[in-house]
Image (cartoon, rainbow, N blue to C red; front, side):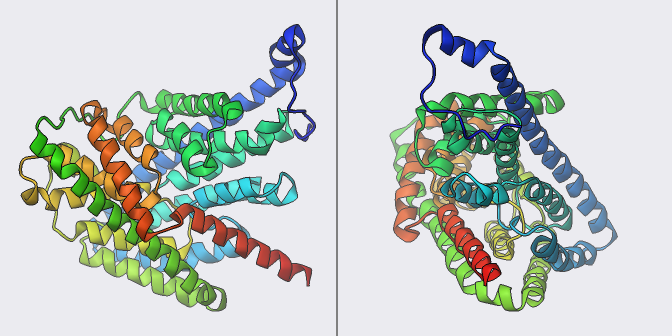
Length: 446
């Protein structure tokens, strides 16, 4: 097995370059290993999708028996998942995106391999599936990113890759594959890898990142067929009067998303000592909070929130005004617990709920357009990745007529959010993860 670190960044020229890259045994080995890792990344995202669908059916069955049954399950779930995470799979905490960002900040070697190991990958998958069936307010994109990064990083054990791919490119490609396959959004997956995970455009790695995202999506298409994540939206903004409201929605949505992100950052640091000293009590308290939310919301806070967002956006379904705050509260509690699970879906659902309840304030805007503007604004405010935010919604809905309004709202949401939360949520969580990892290593050496 090759360690993948011996390749020079200077590549052969001319025919030697063609032979090295395409017609040698080493080239064939690289391509086969990369393709297998990319396919497995897409398969991992599909398995999470499959688990989410069946978890929704399981909760519906439990709700049919008694609303107290799923509330009880989610209340005790963290008491099971958190100890498993800490004792059996340490390092699997968090959504997975901060851990992938953290891996890029660690030089290639044993420390990085610890963050992107087989054990971490298996633990992430197992704990996310347990979380999906237990009912906390989580999405699945973060673990998809982490699993993809693990698989592409592990591929360096079986083939010798170029130095720039070993250092950053393969990890970014795995992250792109996770987002792309989770939502059938290959362009957004690649953009997110550049914008949020890597925080730079890397020309040398761009081809591998895009190819990996495309392959991961194709794997999902084999099982699910071609689809839009939410459905087709064909509305636009036709008048100046409609456009006037876009900056307002962008600023307000970004402010609310920034407040959520800053709240998670502050609360996560404040709760850190208590999680270390009294992990079981903290897990029980957070689990009971999720159970109470599930009871008072009639079960709407269980899971990702995707059915509610899709119903609001595509079918114009009406929900109570408190749906958005309830989903945000559930996702807030879940993020504080540190169990594997994402925030894309819950954030988009919160934005959709805001669009529904504010329609009387913006009667001149088509309801679907209004919902999408709130979704991109709140989501963009939470993740502070403005290009990803509007690109992913366009790919999720084919809303090409709303491309410019969504882009404007997303950019304004980012600027407003940045005033509230100076360091992005994922970056802050990545730094917290690195601090905890270094403190653990220091303690183990003494």
